[in-house]
Length: 249
Ligand SMILES: NC(=O)c1ccc[n+]([C@@H]2O[C@H](COP(=O)([O-])OP(=O)(O)OC[C@H]3O[C@@H](n4cnc5c(N)ncnc54)[C@H](O)[C@@H]3O)[C@@H](O)[C@H]2O)c1
Image: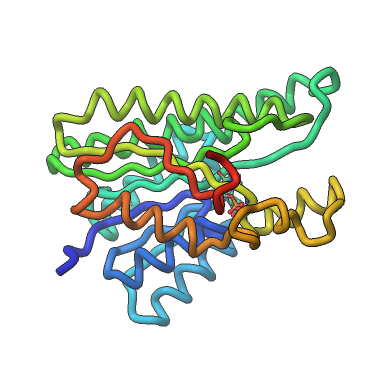
């Protein structure tokens, strides 16, 4: 039987973060939904509570270290020490490399990479104290395939892979695993925004270019994430876990 854990999910108000919150709550974890969109996070936590789960929401910008610390203190107070951390919060921008303004570069790195760093560093002491922890970061297939006009995003996601591996190595002997999921073309608001900006040349959102013949869903990511957060996955750490319909070998 699954032992209910305290799980923190950043970016939990939308897309795959929201699916991950739903799946964790369904299996009996106590879920903290963190998002810069506080209203949507609150709505998500209410939905989870409506289905009998223990859940809370926090409005937080993951690039703000003090706010992250404060938020995790609130989570400890309401749900208990953090045992599972999933970092799904990110922003995506499409700009030609030569035209990326410095402030755009810095913001993407601040949210996607430094935001992940803040959350990991603030949550890991709870896991060390418990001798058990599961960390799942979200990178992107964009670090594995050729992607143009996305250098800041790709650099930030490459950093997430390296950060996750480095952390996994330091905590491997303490019962804490850290893995990263690399999604590819998952049907979420972020993908729909990209389609609106870049167009949809295949007319099917890109599904025909994916070997399994469809776009990925939040549920596909949540299934992988829940496995990595399970008791059974204790021998899996430092890995990049592709969820891509076969698009990346
Ligand atoms: N959708 C895809 O095809 C795809 C592919 C590869 C990787 N990813 C990655 O998957 C993760 C989830 O993306 P998604 O598609 O579900 O996107 P999404 O836009 O639906 O969800 C991202 C969530 O992060 C939140 N967020 C943004 N900035 C934040 C900040 N500073 N602090 C706290 N929360 C913040 C947003 O409010 C939003 O709720 C992201 O890391 C994204 O880079 C997505």
